[in-house]
Amino acid sequence: MPSTIDPRRLKELVRLLDQMGLEQVKLERINPSEFDWLLIDQALVHPSFSGTYNNDQLEFVGDSVLRLSVSLFLKEHYGDRKVGDLAALRSHLVSDKTLAEIASFYDLQKYVVVSNAARNDLQALRSLLADALEALMAAIYINTQDLAFIRKWLDPHMQRFAESLLAIPALGNYKVALQELTQGRWKRLPEYRNVSTAQDNPSNLFSVEVWFDDRLWGQGQGKSIKAAQQEAAAIALQEMQSEI
Amino acid sequence: MPSTIDPRRLKELVRLLDQMGLEQVKLERINPSEFDWLLIDQALVHPSFSGTYNNDQLEFVGDSVLRLSVSLFLKEHYGDRKVGDLAALRSHLVSDKTLAEIASFYDLQKYVVVSNAARNDLQALRSLLADALEALMAAIYINTQDLAFIRKWLDPHMQRFAESLLAIPALGNYKVALQELTQGRWKRLPEYRNVSTAQDNPSNLFSVEVWFDDRLWGQGQGKSIKAAQQEAAAIALQEMQSEI
Image 1 (tube, rainbow over the protein chains, first blue to last red):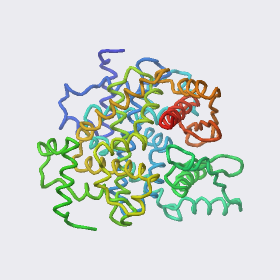
Image 2: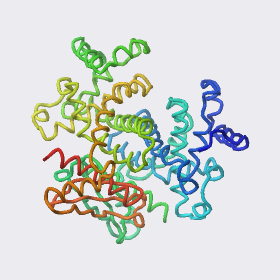
Image 3: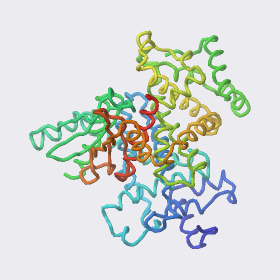
Image 4: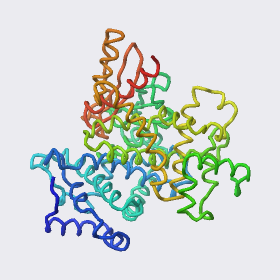
């Protein structure tokens, strides 16, 4: 485990945080000697590169930093909507797909330390970049202990994604929108399968899958069948739209 | 939607936060005129009582406040363990069962506003109290914008639950522990069912169910089959232990 950071690497990381608009905020409010740049470095090291010094635990925390930031964003900006709609929106906004798009906005690929094998696996790249971005959020949060730093740069991205999601016809009702899509293009309906029911499920969550053409397109969980279906439909819809 | 809070209700809520050890911290660091007690009140109103003034959106946020608090707690206290173990621990610590136990520690039932029908449904009570506690965490977080208030009272509870979970034989390996339990008592093994695989699942998560005696005992999700099985086993283990 390194105890100091290479000056060239430090310069790169400062540039990255600067591009995210964080360097200036940080300088105003954090004592520079208290900012742990090694944690920022570690957030960008993929487990394929090192089994001991990598971002797996930061990603574990970062997933929750992201989820809380997005939940607060949604409550503040779309608080007039039903909580089921907010949950469906959230499942999109925290998805690997959304995260990988934000990551590519900042060229995160250039900063990530990863084995050559993993770098050349394009299938895995999306999830690798999403994980690194989540880990980076954790590193920034742990350094600052203040979600405001995350939300300052994350909110405008989320605003953009949320607006384009809500521009889908059958606004916010993903089941209806998915049905319109499959019906319109292929004259058939998607099929919802209940994977479990609350009766025999200790976690009290309903779990639903949505299938079309012998393929699983999305999964959703929720406190009601309806909420789980909406979540599954939202994911399926995004996936289908990205393929057609 | 009320614009002021009944003085008797306010007195009750101050007592509740005092019992949680929060009143004193709050007074030291928050301007009392800026603390929104109506938000605390709303966190304790169940949707069965009012369709418009209730805790459903706060619960949506609070779920993430809890998850981030627990993730940070686990990284700080059990950072020497594998991230799969932390994920299995977290799935316990954020469960309705754990939350309902913490809620009963503070007699939250006395403070919750709920329809009579819902109050008498003992089955639903656990989930109702868990939701109210999550909503309360959101209300406290939104008021203070500082997770330290949550963690100050939540961490000791989580420490207690984590220690008792880790005292299970086959420490941290919930699959082995579950196998030992069912094998030892009933001479049979639990069955793991893969609900989906990463190939046909756009969210890239594996989903696994664990069944025993024709009953679903737990569900888990993870980036590998192994991680999903550990999570499912952890939930099943806790559930079985609470029944025997």
